[in-house]
Image (cartoon, rainbow, N blue to C red):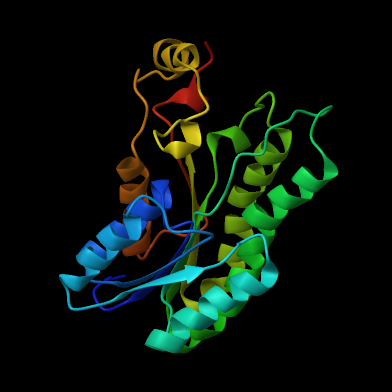
Length: 250
């Protein structure tokens, strides 16, 4: 898919990986809407500047992806402004601490609302537009924590583990309409999401857990998303971006 002139909606697009994805889309000449619960760290201003270089505007939509109506509204507001939506990236998410004995039912349900149920609501709202256009791309952000057992984050790991299968199933359902669905599963990426790590934990990750001995950067994930959007012959895949962390035995 050639992104110039296309319309992209990025949830969680006001910080971290989502913000980097939005900036890369804008740099390709796309019209970009970002949905988030709040604006953060000047990311919207940077996006507006990037979009402005191509004569376009960037749209900010205040929305909580854990709310079904907000998911539907995010697509509706995007299409109300530009008349279409070509790409949806669901990057919104949050940590959900607590192992089996600690996680609350509220936290468990919230994890699935934000990470999993939102995909259904976004897709059901966006797909009719994509069908009319004859093409579309939906990208999900999973996690290495969803591919391996991860202590102390049961709800997060299980919810993220659903997304590669969600991508495969949705890709199969939508393939006749030339709508591609893929997932990426990042490992330890240096964003505010990782700020809870102690210096000792960070050192252990780099020395012992990540074979490439460094943390990833948001642009590492954004470049992969960009490649999956632009390559018209990839669908139903899950791309792991973790410096080799999940492939190691010791």
